[in-house]
Amino acid sequence: MKDFLRWIGVKQAAHETTSGIVFDERDIWWCKLGANVGYEVDGRGGSFERPVIIVKKFNLDTCLVIPLTTKPKKGKYYFSIGSASGREAVANLSQLRLVDRRRLTQKTGVIAKPMFKALLAELVRVNFTYEDTV
Image (cartoon, rainbow, N blue to C red; front, top):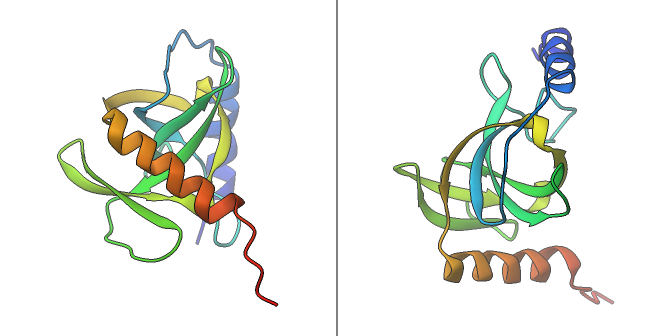
């Protein structure tokens, strides 16, 4: 059972926080993604956090992120990035989302430029390429 009421409190506290966090593209951060609906990826633990890769920095306050999982997953929307914080990590390309920096809590690493370029190419290929099935 999802604890939406507890998430509301965590989310309100994050909203009311003044953040001096500085982030960049390619960074891996723990992020308060929350308790979400249906198949949307959730955060874990008391702070509803999950690691994410920052794929696009729009300004000092917002960025586009891809959630990570340590569970081995295969398929069109999963991309292995290798080791992150000492564990094998897989990016969930279908769960791309915009977040405010107040959701970011702790930087845990940076992925190498060649891996980041490969990740972006795969993200574009699977999410933004029209496939004519007719």
